[in-house]
Image (cartoon, rainbow, N blue to C red; front, side):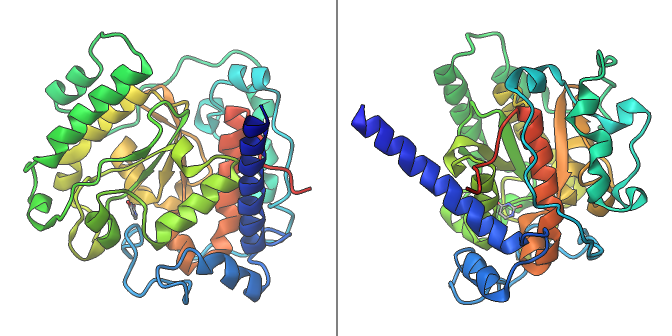
Length: 349
Ligand code: URA
């Protein structure tokens, strides 16, 4: 009993600490905090602990898909609004702006301060229209991998984990595209396959390739802070990528490479059946739904994966390492995800 309470207290402390670190970075008004606080917070995210920005381009910041720096805006974007009650969030279905007559793009809305226009209250207005077909122009998953993974067997946690291991095993020997030639390790996933939320990145970078784990470099450490600020431990969510092998020099994966790898992601998501997918960066959104629209336009606007799973596109953490002022927008997107999940952030006290 005492042990359980102690563990709960430790979890709570970790969450609050992570939130405070995140808050130090985003600042009370949602903009980057005091340089010292920012440095301290980012220091942990830096691979050498000395400089916030990585020396080589981080995976997910390949230049081609780098958004133009967001316009700095005032307001209180970092303030918490209490999440809706669980029931309300559950019945909220998807606050999908496009299904609702088209919410304006962030730029048109004049900033995310006016995000309330499509907040969860909107989701409570009435029954959802039937889900639209997926926007996806992404290649169809290879039938065998995806179908085998989601075949009608008992869907227990153990069964799901076992099937995911089978897919990971298949990935380990995959030679479907030239990326296999340069890899040290394939990078399948980390985290909890029963999680309600899945984070999807672009593809492994150098450190991920070395360790065989997604998001373990500088961008990954920042992602861990984002996840902790949402009130989760990094192991409580599921994290994976569009491609499972590192593209050379951290370049963006080619469409053919993404197509070759897509059955694996399809199978992963079919097994996990998350309530929400957070797409980190333009490549992740492209790999999931096939759009080639820029992330600055896409972020903060709900999309649908295969007609059923809500996707929240947001900036890639590697971009945030170079453009810390964009953390404000990311935090706004993550709060939207939390609202959808009926989850509250740790209290600032
Ligand atoms: N960036 C990604 O998109 N994925 C990783 O695994 C690491 C960095």
